Length: 115
Length: 111
Image 1 (cartoon, rainbow over the protein chains, first blue to last red):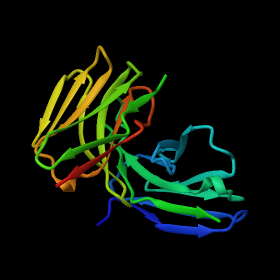
Image 2 (cartoon, each protein chain N blue to C red; image 1 turned 90 degrees about the horizontal axis):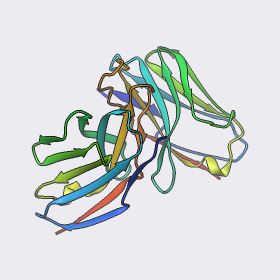
Image 3 (cartoon, chains in turn brown, cyan; image 1 turned 120 degrees about the horizontal axis):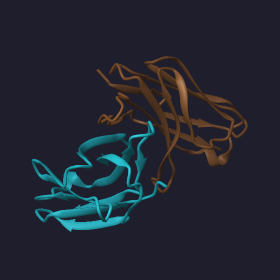
């Protein structure tokens, strides 16, 4: 009964390929995120969607394109993969009540390795 | 601006208390959080504190907030080997739908 689930858990691919990571949440939240965690474990937000609308895009290269078909899903498509894209990508969701607690619940992560 | 800093490592012996510190710069932060990340896993929310509080206790966990100095700490009492993990503090302000995470503190508990 996973709250935030991502697939795949591991992804190994060659430079130049295009790949997608999928995320689904069953918490009824209206806000979803993609975070990137690098090899030093630093976590940086990439995108945030609220009710299927993009509200945050933190200067991510346009090779990364998020898509939210509905409130419960947020997918990440990456074109022309580069070595520097190797990282763990986390999906998260929260309930975006203004001024509310809005703690984020995280998926298990997708470890992307570009070779 | 947003900048959240933590010391990178902390090593304690089993049974001791651990104190993990965090400083942040955004004075408009409303909620502050502590997350735990075990190897190969996602982030698990441990606890949170609202910015108008200065202390919160939850079983073995005590959160202290000094809003004037923008300093947050997490104390783990009677630390166990299972507490070994990376601990992240995070802040959320009213204006933005995102959490800004600290650099993470790797806690190592030795028997």
